[in-house]
Image 1 (cartoon, rainbow over the protein chains, first blue to last red):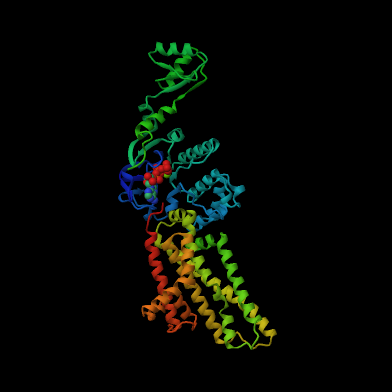
Image 2: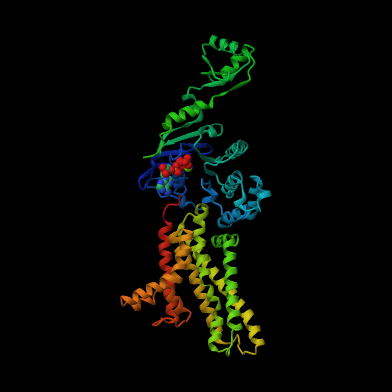
Length: 303
Length: 246
Ligand SMILES: Nc1ncnc2c1ncn2[C@@H]1O[C@H](COP(=O)(O)OP(=O)(O)OP(=O)(O)O)[C@@H](O)[C@H]1O
Ligand SMILES: [Mg+2]
């Protein structure tokens, strides 16, 4: 629909904390119904950007808008935007259920909804316990439950995967995917691109407070050279089959091949030549490489 | 209304609130027991008034609860969540002022009721003739309530202005228990004694009708001056709460 403001829009956002320029003239917007990964090294300005978007931090310059308006001007903020902040927002002495109830009460949300969400994030059994005794993963789940209380169309999640074990990360991925499939718009930050690569549609990369890339994941992957990792017990035969098609395959330390062609192509060639494959996937380290390239490697301390 | 209900729920679901209430009640009971139990001489007008004012021994508790209503949110980071639900900060502050006033009211009612519950049967058994109908009962109840309500709100203002839990609690206690006396002495030295009665504790003393200080304000003026301090603190809190929450 023309003229309809995007769910999230950052326009020329600048934030200076005394001597630190945390966010430097940052602009990007998030399209409806997509998951956008907001990625950058530690101290890149992700949290500051998200907090400005949520009205917690006042921009030095520029603006950060939700549905075209500052967060403070939303009529029912948590019914429109669900948020998980990076830092803990729980009183350790309060139970998980009571935490959700305080939020629900302030927003005029039914108590039954609290039980629904406890169930959804798998905290029903622990709901009576003090949050102080929760594991990191349980806290992240509680945070997600709070974010979803108002059934918002937009989700802003600051490093929700922090502290999760692989099992928890998988749970989170599926969870986010499900939410996105329901048509929600999600902006999720991380300092590890690979953590998000499989889940997000778009990636916005930030370094030293500036936007260095904003594109669909596939575009970034393509830009990274589209390297495919393939492993076969018939490695030699595979190399020859690939070479016959003009595709280079470089052997990796563990016996796999790094191939500069998309996985579909490699799979088809292997099938045509009757070659068994044990592994076939897009090499995510190539994404990591482009990330490091774009963000300038380790020198990520803002001026 | 939602906000107020949420603030009440936040208080109810934390230990601090119950501990402060319990301490207030215990202290009040101790003072009542002390006042009646040690009564060697006759139980006169003076002892009756002291008895009625027993809840004031715990005047620090509404102050502390009030400050914690704000500072606990900063201490534990719940302020982030609260501001996500209620991004208009003056509105959140107003809800907190209201809930602290409510706490003051509840604290006053409960401690006053406890005092009467202990004192009336006991004095009755001692054949001391005191009656609930005595106007001084109603007057003192009113004064204690007004004092506690204002102190609760003052706590919110100071807590909001400082944001820091330990800082606000220590600051309030030090002012009311030590610093104001020093300031009064200092004012005396520079011959500004007249100003001393406008200080917060002096205003509270005037409000409750104490005559420890020379030159006290009238009770109603004391109440107004204390309310003025609440307004000053609330204004400072409004300014401080405008700052970034990171
Ligand atoms: N309240 C503050 N006062 C001063 N400097 C701050 C404040 N908050 C953030 N900064 C600085 O701003 C810069 C950006 O910080 P920010 O927290 O936004 O980064 P980030 O991308 O979220 O990093 P991380 O991945 O570590 O969470 C950092 O240099 C940080 O030190
Ligand atoms: Mg961060």
